[in-house]
Image 1: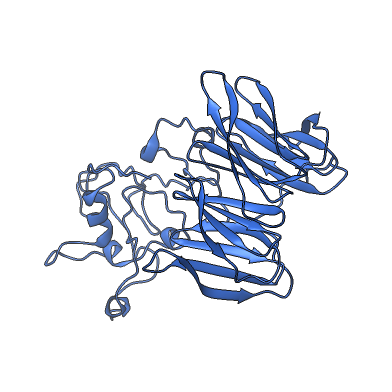
Image 2 (image 1 turned 180 degrees about the vertical axis):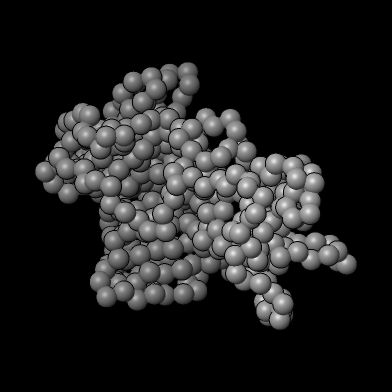
Length: 361
């Protein structure tokens, strides 16, 4: 994510949060850590309190320090004074506990900005409502989405859509209204859904011997043939769509603006058994297979550049996180891989589970 370098997001904001310059007078607010920052949900700008932990020496309580009501009151420097003995301007930031000037106290909103959730809030940092997707410290069940008759094998939320898509082994894709939680439609796809992903307005569904494709903006529908057996995993990278198939191949398609459809681009071979997991990281495609190996493919050449064989059972799921590759397997382990000086991946940590690990997200 790019950050602007002007005064709103740049050095001014960092300077204010790190406290006063050397030799400047200290205030109660500049030596107190923001409790909302510690909880990961501070939305004040500028925030009067620190967004960093205090040095150990600074946390020692002074004999004359007050912790009771009125002990930590921040006054807006742009309000023309205010407070006891001040000039008395209106403080738009409100007052802390124990304020005696009758200023308006603003309660922090308990819900996120609905325009931010829709992607079109024009207030930015000045918005009175938090720009966050979650206001809770825990995950709460809103409602179960019931309707599929067999196991759900994939979900997708296309960009700009208010519909959630779910695929199941019952041979259907269901559309769910994100506002009401009600099923808005059922699409028979002609076979068990093995996987599902979305990329922009596109929804891709893996079924036996094919990949179903829908564009939610243009309502275009396509059927990509070529796979043999079930399609267990899908991934997008370097303007290519990859499908992991039951016969051990990885098929690739490229979208053509001329024909307005996906055209076959390559077939990646090397795995001895079905490929069940795919992930793209940087300019690499990683594939996990029932043959207990992970293969690393160069997206520029579509050639296999390394085979990882530390797992002793099916590699069920892969995840790229920072500079690491994570893998989980039915061998009851989760492995963390990192690149060495030679550029090859090696296991740096292995976590043992009581049961086989099925998925990483």
